[in-house]
Amino acid sequence: GKLFKEIYYFTVENKEYGELVREALSGSAHTVLSKSVLPNSIHKYGWDENAYHDAAIVYGDRPYVAIVFTNIDSGGNKADAYIRDIFKKIAAFHNSLA
Image 1 (cartoon, one colour):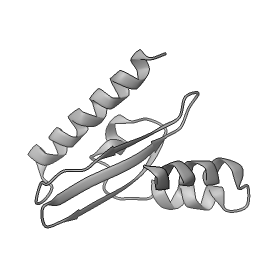
Image 2 (cartoon, rainbow, N blue to C red):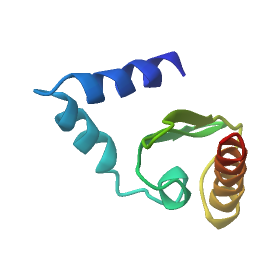
Image 3 (spheres, rainbow, N blue to C red):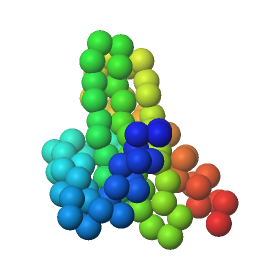
Image 4 (cartoon, rainbow, N blue to C red):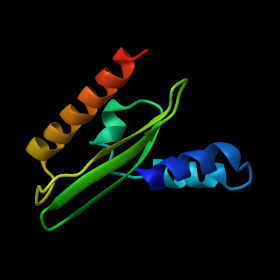
């Protein structure tokens, strides 16, 4: 979370390279996780044995970082839907605080 917080500050404060970082984290071909349910976000996902994760920075009036770590072995429709559901709940909770 701290790393993504610092990435957020870098992307909004560094005019020269901030947009380059945003573009790099927006360019993933894997958009079925956080990117599909968190508008105006950038993300990085990863998977390995017993690990399927996604971390996102959500921009807007009240920006925030949302990260989901799991012990799921790999993706697929069921795993992707599970992670999307968690991100939807995070977004709903964040929006309820407005």
